[in-house]
Length: 102
Image (cartoon, rainbow, N blue to C red):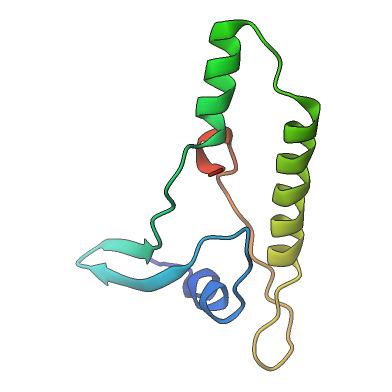
């Protein structure tokens, strides 16, 4: 099993306020793992669920704040470079409301 070490190494060396911090990566037998910081809070899916159950809309300022923050984090990750300046864009392969921590 192969693990893309570049993502965790770049996340450690190029921190961003809207991206989680990675502490360690490794593997045991055929299983890979990444140890990252615990983010205390709720995810966007929980907010959507509450608004759906109440039949209310998510306030526009909140929506645009989350959208802008997510866009900034993704742009930062996509523009990543290694220590020598070579482009090494990070691609998040699982963007969904339950993976957006607030």
